Image (tube, rainbow, N blue to C red; front, top):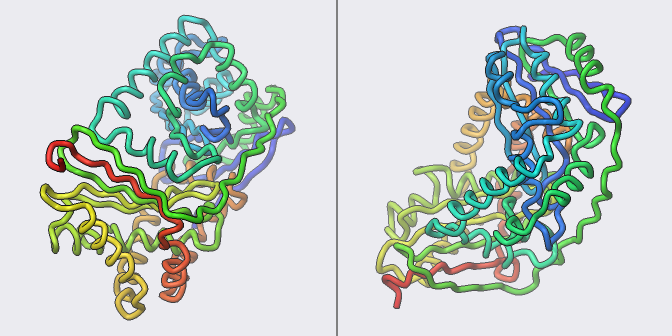
Length: 415
């Protein structure tokens, strides 16, 4: 059981506190309710660019990392379609340094042209390395734009196109920052060796004086139901052909979320998963294959992708993949698999929540979802999934008209 307390400052900052005296450390997690879905379709990649910019110094502190490291701290961050998340850990006696650093960069960053140009070049190089100059790197760019037609999930966190980042100017980044990075659009979570009283006092001292900001109203277009199968084939000079399939599913808070999560665990639970056993080890059609749900706050995707063995026809591989998915509708055949993945989920969840950093991250995200106590409820929600729920979900979602398929064809072997 992860016990926590929460309060809200007058400026709207939500704060959650979990005390754990077994550690000498404190984890601080600041979640901003802004991600790539909040970008203009003509200027994507701003949320991720700002994640980098946040480490380029603030209005008053020219270098973020140096004072943090001198205080014995470590930090990192990530951006998703839905959120931007910053986190650090440091000895409890020095945690006020964390409050000082994070509150100062919430006020205003170093928006010098030099800093902006540096961070922009870093992101451009990251785009090239991860998406353009890497085999299969652009596959998710194409799969997302195939599956989504209007919702901003149709582009990845780094941006829809490298030209968007190249053409971004400093004023755009500043407007984006002041539109979303504010106490009334953030959640602060503290876990570890810190008391509620100290967390309250330091939150009031460092974050309390920061003024609220006008947060841009989120009015995202809803993705219409997909009513016909979508297929795209591309040919590139890659080692082998790859297959990508995506089915639309509900939101992170939908009733089917844990059922679909369990389904992907059955399909892709390591070497004991059905996809590996049947298609890699058994029929030797794929060299590797994976399945997962995107866990997006808005309706997301269930994705299966794999790389074919040389000489295997994509039609044969896809038919065999569909057979494995169809086998999930056999109730007698999934009971043992369900027991196995439920036990694995419980053990991994319990183990994950021994980390103060994971607890801070999970409490923040669950607060954003509207129920921070999910951190204590998820195992039971997962346990409640039964064979009938799995069968019903398979029948509802795994249908051709709900599927987008990308054939990433190798020109080396499939001419």
